[in-house]
Image (tube, rainbow, N blue to C red; front, side):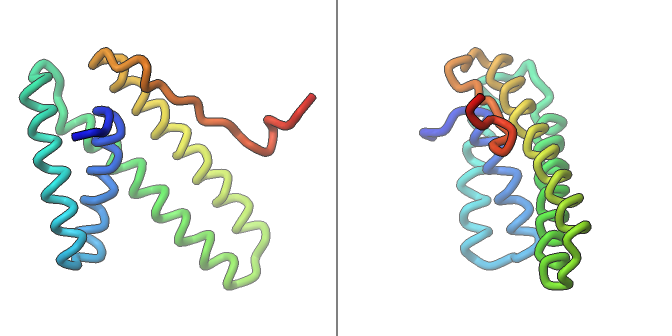
Length: 126
């Protein structure tokens, strides 16, 4: 696979959620592709509990999906406070995803793949 280990785990977790929740033939085909990549990772780095690590990605992405749906619902309901509070939660869970990906990159020695999640609103020029 052309992706880093962290990217593959993140994408695998999203594909797994889509296959479970949407369940189209396309989502199942994508999941199978990423399952093959996950098996390669497990074989290459057997010293790590990949099921545990993958579950953390699944949990984070599941919560992001939940709150993104809630944001859309809040937008439909025209409730700015709900939209704002849930947007903050999505940002925090995305930061968790990035940190988890960085930890995986460090574990497998892909330190060129480290990412920094920026709060684009607060990163303006000073």
